[in-house]
Each structure stands twice: as C-alpha cells, then as structure tokens.
Length: 446
Ligand SMILES: *Cc1c(COP(=O)(O)O)cnc(C)c1O
Ligand SMILES: [Zn+2]
Image 1 (cartoon, rainbow, N blue to C red):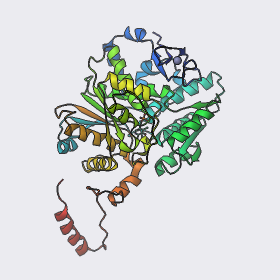
Image 2: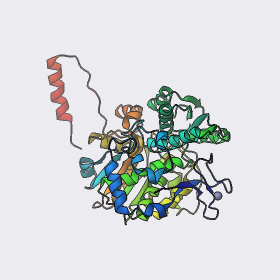
Image 3: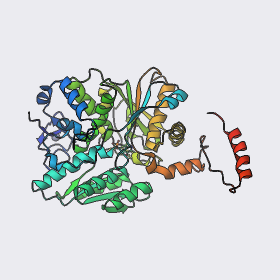
Image 4: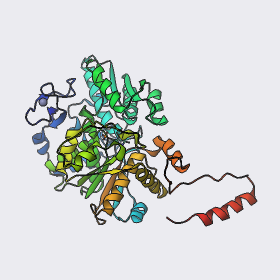
C-alpha cells in the first residue's frame, strides 16, 4: 500500500495544494497557512484495529526508526520519506505519569502529566523537528539547493533545530532574542554547531527577520508556520491516547505561545477519530501567561476578532509571543474541541510549578502555566474533579534553573510560598544536629 501526503492551504475558499518537497510555507495564492493533508481514504482501508496493532508493535521497539514515538506512526506523518533520510534521535515515547500527590493537594484524583521534556533536546520541539529535518535531508538528496535551515526561537525551537541538523550534517542558523532565553537554551545551539545570531529584539522581531531572509529559497524556514513541524507534534495526542490503551481522556491542557502545538494536538486527535481509532474527543485547554495572552483576549470576545499584542517579559519565556503565527489554526482547534483558554499570572505560574516540584515533579515555567490554569479551572468548576485530565508538560525543568533559583531566593517580587533554602553551617556534628532539630520542627505541612 502506498500512502501519500501533500501541503494544502487552510483557507477553505482557496484549497491550493503543493507537493511536500516544494519550498513553500504559506499559500502562494492567498497567503494563508498550509497544512499537511493525507490520503485518508487509503489510510482508512487499513482499518482502525490494524493501525492500533501496528503502532503497539513498533512502540519503543529497537526497529529503527519505527521504535521512535514519531516514526512508529510514519504512514500518518510523512509517508513518502525514504527511511535513509529519516533523522531520528528516538523522539516521542515520553512518560505519562499519574500525579497522585499533586492531584490530591489541588483536589483532583485522575490527573496525569505527559512529560514531553524527557527527550533529546529537552522539549517537545524535537517531535516536529525530526520530521522537518528529515524532509530537508530528502530534498537535499533529490538535489534541492538548500544551504541551511533557519529559525527564530524563544529557545527551544533553536535547540531542537540545531541538534537535528547537527545529526544530519546540515547547517543550522538560529535567530534569538538577546537576554530573553535561558542560559541552557543559548548553549544548546552553540554546542550543536549552529550559526547563532543574538539580536536586540523580542521573538516577534526575530520572526519578522526570519520571514524576510527565508525569501531566499536556499535558506529553509523551520518555524512552526512550516506545517511539517505540526505533523510530528501531532503525535503527542495520539501517543497519550495509546498510553491509556486507546481511551480518550476528558481534558488535555497545553501551554500556548505561537500556537503550533495546540493545532498539532488537535490535528492528531481528529485524525484518530476520522480513522476510527477513537469515537470521543477530549476538551482542549490552552494556558497562556497573562503577560503574553493574545489568544486569551480573543477567547474572551468569543473569537470575534483577534488583535496581536506586544508580549511583556514573563518567566514563561518560551511563550512570550504577542503575534502567534498559528492563530487561525488554534482558534479552529478550540472550536472543534469545545476549547477553553485560561491565563496565569507570574505568581500563579511560579507557585504552581513550585508546588508541583514539591510533589516530585521538576517543572518548567510553561508547565507551571498549565498547572496554574488547571487549578483555576477546577476552582471555577470548569473542570470537574471526577474528570481524567492530562497536563502536557512541554520542556524539562533543567532548562530553566535560573527561574527556579530566583524563586527559592525569593527574588521574584512575590512571597514564594514554597521557597526552600540550603542551610549553611560548619561541618561539625553538634552544629548539624542542632540545625536538624530546628529545621525538621519548622518544616510544616502544605
Ligand atoms: C514552544 C514552546 C511552547 C509553546 O508552543 P507553541 O507551539 O509555540 O504554542 C510551550 N512550552 C515550551 C517549553 C516551548 O518550548
Ligand atoms: Zn490559499
């Protein structure tokens, strides 16, 4: 059986299509975003049970590249790619764990965390980048004159791009907003041989420049307006359902910035429904930082109109975006999934992340935004405590230690309820014993 996919314009009045090996990021006819469309009729002929069996057999196996979470679903992602051009670092297949203790504290029993940060470059961006860089490798092998792959980034996209390009032997170029990303995020592309441009602007400013420089077709654009990334990222929802033995949870909560990931989440779930693997869709919640909340504002007016904003500095730096590229796709997704948008202040996101950490997580601030949104929606009765809720954790906390250090040093301008400080004392038994007596006494419950 041969399966096929192509780019299609998302504007229903246009519907132009392009082969996947065309250098195209938005529609030449009407400038709308594109999405990858699959031959669902051909895919449907295989039958839902056969797909589930195939996906189960491949999941985390050692059969390269099909053991990787993304490539185990290759026919649904990028069917025409030659296995020799797949650039995979075994992405996907991340843990989904029951957050029992955190859930008890905030009043919900069936709460799960999908830890997308447990991956090669430490964020879910790997899921999309493996697909994009594989397609680029294939295009280069077919003779396309691509000299480098370029992205603007709030830190995690550039880390993923640099690592996959380094693995493939393709030059990467990353445009980063100076001082607005973490040290770990800066050192990742530096280590992975990227050309790093560090610019005095914000993400939206980097994005504007990237759109200009990639008018040169030898510089291939890797931002999520390139819908190849969405194809890889859409496996997250499919994988969650698979991990629940093909049962759909009630709610999925995802932090949103440029809004490619929520669009991807929806796309994967709709594909499962259309191919008969599930019959029910979850509700989707997008969580935004209050300081970078253009989607939340549009949600409040019923998506009547959307206004880009200038995002303010937020601890959740990877979602400090005021003019999200995938806004139209995200709104469409929210409408299809009975969606909700919630926001979190700096204090709410930091406290939620820290509370989670106290129960054994190690949250990045964006996961903090999602956890805070969940707590607020529970309190407001918009999520019921009997529901099965999955919070999508987007990055590894180790990428954001500066924020955690400041939190525990109480330097963030709010109380830091869960602050914990090392006790400095001389290395003498009596001093240690006295300190322990006092400290264990003082250690309250929360
Ligand atoms: C990129 C990113 C997001 C936001 O994803 P979008 O697709 O831009 O909405 C959230 N969290 C982390 C850690 C990220 O790197
Ligand atoms: Zn079009």
